[in-house]
Image (tube, rainbow, N blue to C red):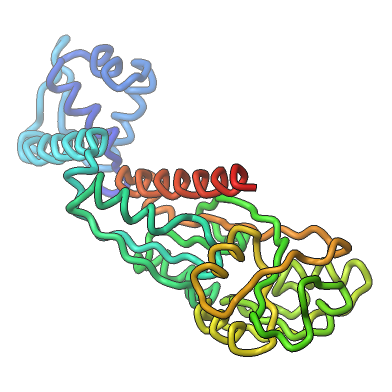
Length: 317
């Protein structure tokens, strides 16, 4: 039955059940002419007649009697599956979701996400991962190893099987530095900022000019790039900043949270002459989960905890 689709099978079952082409077509929201053409394509796909017209009635052929029971079962199971999707209840969901999120982002609020999932879907499980490398992460989405990727850049434009949207954007306005930094006091000039060494929590292996939006903005203003070390672990970065003379640039909210949580760190605003730069976070998912109700529910939770975190930051400022 090559090239037959579910809509054609539903139409034939409706035709035999109602004994009326116009009524069968109406059930599927089709015109009688479109339904007739669809049934003709189905007969061609099957390779032989499964019903014949007898007066105003439609009678199954021997071949039709042979396969009709199986076709009705397929259509019934398909309808049940659609109804189950439409009736999705988080409290009954027992899936195990995997979200991969860049470690240097303060949004989405993963703690709140996990708490809300535990409350709304107590049977489900939520695992968090750290992105490894752009191509590796795209492969993980395609293979089903992760369900959602929260990354600092959208997928390639030619990745037609991937969907994405921007979750949030944060102005990069502060630096984290050690309480005992040997050269910087309570203010930071642009000359000092450019002369110091920097740490960047990053996972994408890009060319140096595009690794960081900060360096791209500095180059566009005629400044030199920062001397930066790229580290794929946020917590290694924080330990290095607290115990040495590195600087780490981030949003005001991120700097405030981390300075309160990690001993030996303080924050300072960037020099006023620094170019305005934003860090973006993009949510990326694969076509296989695009219409899945449980995964749509998960993505909506991610949107909510991202919006709430951004709103709390704006109110606090």
